[in-house]
Length: 171
Image (tube, rainbow, N blue to C red; front, side, top):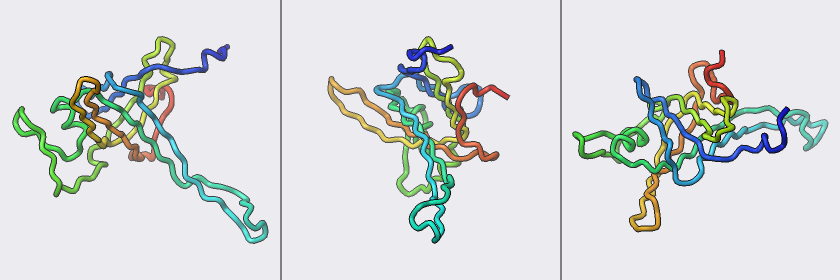
């Protein structure tokens, strides 16, 4: 039986972005917390007979995202988290202002796995179809890490699944 202290979860995690192929993109070094957010939007159902008192409320939307303050900033990493960017040879990544990009084209599975020694697969969060959006925050001095803030926003997959909590291999 779990004790009160067993229900408190703290510590870092690793984030895996399945980019297809044999080698996923793993973010295992961050500067600051990784934040997962799940939100519901609802619609209250009202009828004239009860005035402003709702008689029901239905969920009309769900949004998920993971915010990851990534410390890695090599060209290959930037190419993966800036949708629509292009690598020029081995020396540069170009981003175009006049390129319209569908984020869904860059969406794939994102898994968040806590690294605590007491973490289990029950603690895993899987966003089934998430696309990256990057915000670069580079401060050039001795006191600040150069951070690439990546937000993975979830979209429903082909089956309508958005997010899973627990063992991603369960059937």
